[in-house]
Image (tube, rainbow, N blue to C red; front, side, top):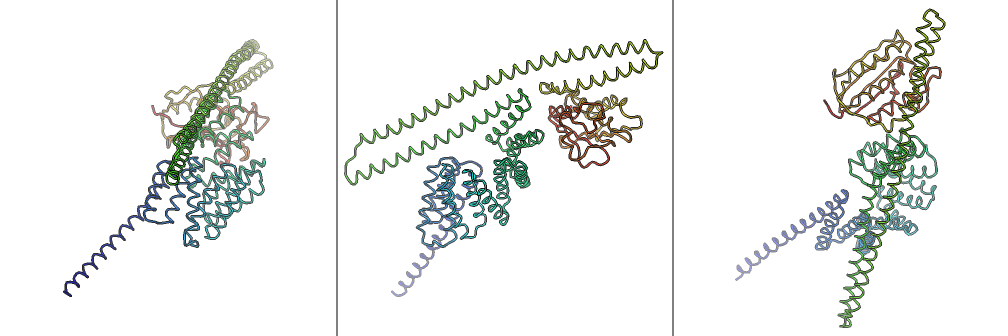
Length: 619
């Protein structure tokens, strides 16, 4: 009997150990699953897949509730609240954050770091919702409470975030000095924590303060620091914010060439990350810049593109607004259902008529709001179409007037010039034996030629906006040789001209006439300013880019004037013939060819001009 009892005891002991091992294994698996859904939800949220993120975090919440893990439940609630906040569904977001805050306050170990961190996350979520709703006083109180929590757990990054949040409140309420103070505190904390993203965001916020206070130089410096940091880190989204801010500031201050560079960079980045909201901003900046330049054709095109992307973003926001309405409706319906069940238990009586009527009222209100919203959207769309049509007609008329004027002026100016040149040549042939009269005739002809060149340059620049490049197969070597032949008579006799290329006989798709004109304008300048030495032309082809460099041993361009010389009517030497329009026209032509042209500041011993053009297609 004793043996039987002993064996039974041993068997029960083994069975108990086996059950404990199985429970431990299941608990570990449950913890791993909770962590998996938590991190998966964050990845989906960072990828802007908010609906999928909510599903993942709700799976994690269900598992945490099964495991009775309060801390994991609180984290899941906060994550769901953040997901809804990113979608713009603020009522649902605040509900989850407040649930998390309430449950966290009931946790037994209130001094643990995890508990305090959960509380701070809830407070930050609620504070951001309050800012969005415009309740700045309550948001300030919430963020200061969160700041105390971050200080208690020693989170420098968390302190930096809350300093920036408080600075944002002061910025929104037009207290610039206070906002600047808190942004600087955030900057110091981010530097201490080594958070480059935080540092960049602080530079952007401080730049906005300086811009609001009309301190353009400091604003530009701050935006450039933010742009360099994020571009160096490969964070294209945040780099895009500062890039657009720089472009907008340069447009406001009529710094067109610099604005164009940042607009081009912003457009490429926005297209790569498929950000419709940023594309709408970029094309609106292009529209403003074209308006300033009286480039009505491109202004209309950019306005249409900006409206197109803005409408797309607006539609997405409208969808989120409707989602918000539906969430409110569902929550209200649930409330009514709870009331109905309570009435059944306490009064054993239910007023079905009242409930049906209440539901009908809610649905009617929702339908009325929906109809009003759609009607308003239709009216706005109709007004936008009317404005676009009106702008298009005005632009079309302006372009027609401009084209007619250009044709007329070309004819009216060139006709008398051709007559003068013709008669001067006739006079030269008649007075060939009179040296003084012959010299006078030659001077007349030379001045007419110079005047013709000046007029051609001005008219070409005025007509550049309506010019459409015609791409054909072009042998680059032939183009360069033709241009060099054209300046052979204008250069000084003791100046040598050299041409080098990395690939002879290279053929690419481009507009031959426009490319020849751009090269001629630069080489003509080089011939004017080079009295001795040499002029070198080099072509290279790499990474889909053709690079043409034209260097000379002339007087050169001071480093501080390398951009200034591309502006209209600017001349380094007032005694050299010309109107200072050559490089201006050259840049306009290269821009039409979708390229870049600039002067190398590092070049010593003369001037070096660089042209970069995309190699679109080989022959």
